[in-house]
Image (cartoon, rainbow, N blue to C red; front, side, top):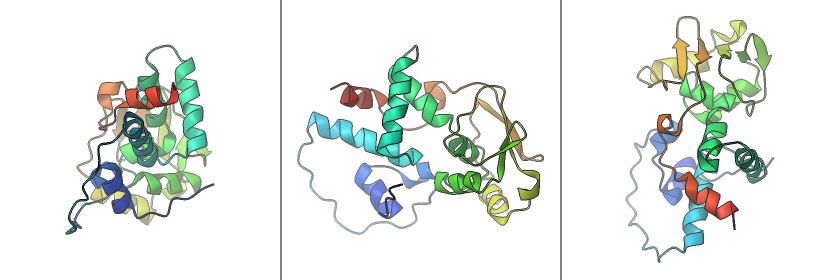
Amino acid sequence: MAINRTPVLKRCRQLGLDPVVLGYSSKKESIRQPKRRRKESEYGIQLREKQKTKFVYGVQEKQFRGYFKKAKAMPGVTGENLMRILESRVDNVVFRLGFARTRKEARQIVTHGHITVNGKRVDIPSLRVRPGDVVAVAPKSKDLLVIKSALISNERVQVPAWLEVDIEKLQASVLALPTREQIDLDINEQLIVELYSK
C-alpha cells in the first residue's frame, strides 16, 4: 500500500485544512508568508476537494474510487452516500468515540485487534458498521496506555448523535447511519461527484 510521508501539518496547509479536524493540535504557527496562488481551474478545485477527503479519512485512490462506485449505485444523493460510507468505517467510528486521538491512531488500534464489533474481534479498518452494531474495546485491551491517554485528552470530544457511547464499559452502539448534517467536515462532496462524472 502506498504511504504518504508528507508531514501532516504541511499537508493540511496545502489542502486548506484545520489540523484539529484530524485530531492534531495546531500549536505550531507558520511564520512563512503565504504564497500567492494563481486562480485555480474548475478541475483544480474539484481535485483539491477529493484530495482533502481522501487525506481526512486516510483512504487511497483505488479504495476511494470503489467507495464512489458503491455510493453511485445506492439510492439517494451520491455525494451524501459517499460521506456516509466513509463515516461508517470502523476506524473512523473509533476516532469519533474518542478511543483514539487521530484517525491514524484509530486505524492502528483496529489493525492490532484491540476493537470488537458485536463481540467479534476485527482487524480491518475499512469494515463498515451498520445500525444496531456494538463497537467496543476488546476486554484484554481496556488497560492499553494508548486508549487511556486518548480518553484523557479527548474528554471534551463531542460524540455524534448517531453513536451512543458508554465510557465506563468502553463500548458504543451505532444508532443509525449519519445524515450529512451530522458530519461536521467542511467538504463539498458535490465537487467530487462532478470530478468523477467527467
